Image 1 (tube, helix red, strand yellow):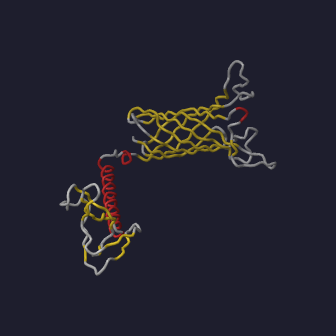
Image 2 (cartoon, rainbow, N blue to C red; image 1 turned 90 degrees about the vertical axis):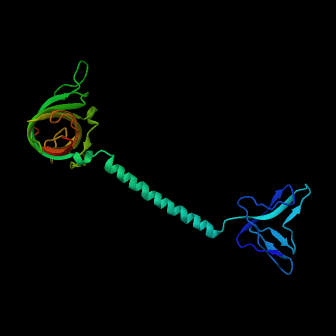
Image 3 (cartoon, rainbow, N blue to C red; image 1 turned 90 degrees about the horizontal axis):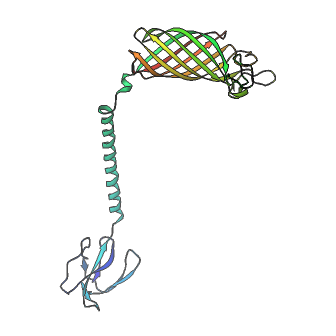
Amino acid sequence: MRTQLTAGYQGGHDCAPGPSTTALKPGLVRVQLRSSARGRESFGPMGVTGLAFPGWPSFAKHWHGSHCHHVPRRYSTSNEIKGVLMSVRASLRRWGVTIAFAITLCAWFVAPTLAQDLKLGHFVDSATTTFTGCGPVGPGIDCKADCSGTACTFFTVSFTGNGKADPGGPFTFTGTTTAFFGPLGSALTPNGAVNPDGTPAGVCDPTFTSAHSVFPNGTYDTEAKGETCCVGTSCGAVGLGPPTTAHQSSVCISGTGKFAGIRCSGEETSSGLDGVHVIGRGESVSTK
């Protein structure tokens, strides 16, 4: 007889205490035996040569007295592997769709709807600025309020103004801005303008602003960081102009009345021709 395997197998044997053992271990299969005129050489999947003879017994007795039933071990075919991979991919796709749907439901029903409640606002304003002085000023420090001295690193201006917001209506505001230019102007950056000799014709200066705004139904306080730059053909000996432009980003830090508990984010641009009067416009998003 010769052994014909209808699928790929690896040879093996199943040992039992006595000759009557015929049961196979889980995962093993019986080999279908077909008659053949003579013995024939066959090759297993691992390249091992075996010889099948007519009348080959289904079990044999070994030196230890046990009878071993010779059975092949089944291994997976390429078609079966492809089938498993296709099944896994299909399952992953189904799980992916399920997870995405669950996340969407959470976004609809569980996540806060803060973005839907935000209010977009626009405003215009005008202000009058007053130069306060340079600093730091104190005993032993080579800096005076008129900015003379080698130890001056910043100057401060105060401002008052009014404006109109939509929504919100008319408002007034007051505040201060500090511009840090650093020791000997080390914090200043070129504004892009160039003198005939190739040196910078103007500079930009980092700023920090605190402001208090008053509306008919409440107040709020903001803090902002930004930059002011000279934009003239001649920016003076210091390079800060006028004329100037400024840009700043702000955040609300407190509020009263209607604006109690407000959260806001704002952007504003402004400009001035004479170093005293400034006009500006901006927009904001807020919870109030």
